[in-house]
Image: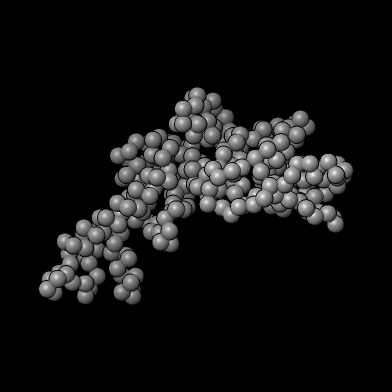
Length: 251
């Protein structure tokens, strides 16, 4: 193990001794000083987790979250000095973390909070002018593949994940049931939006590059014809479409 790897490993493993050759002033051992530095590093990473997942923290309590985040930090050290998106593996970690196995929704809440951060830091894109749609026939539109904004994210959950998130931001208590959530960024801040029931399958197909017509064929059985206009209105109103292309048409 190289000196750098040994140093990094010791930072997140409290039982490991300081790396060989690391000394304090006057050649004295760096044990106590290194312990202080190690504690500060772990504390800063836990603080980043608290900032990134405030609803998860509220759901489990501050003390438990600190302990749980410490477990995560030691198992998943940051791969980049930029901590703005630290915690990408946290939803998967929560899904396998036995002490919260009874909170089946917790991993999806973490996915939602992570997606909101990702959307915030995504690249900008100019939204499509909705008036352009009037220049195409229904057949043309069905063949086209939408260019979705880089900030768009989709969360599909068996739980009322948006309702849980909203309840912790002053909303009403969530009603039971699955929810599909679209995250768009019409301005500077991302917005989580509840999709019509079954609409998540359509968005997932569009994200895979399917044409609008093919994506609508992927809709769940709950998705009604009247939901098509609602879904398109959500996408257009919140700047989630930045263009489209298909069979000789480009915009």
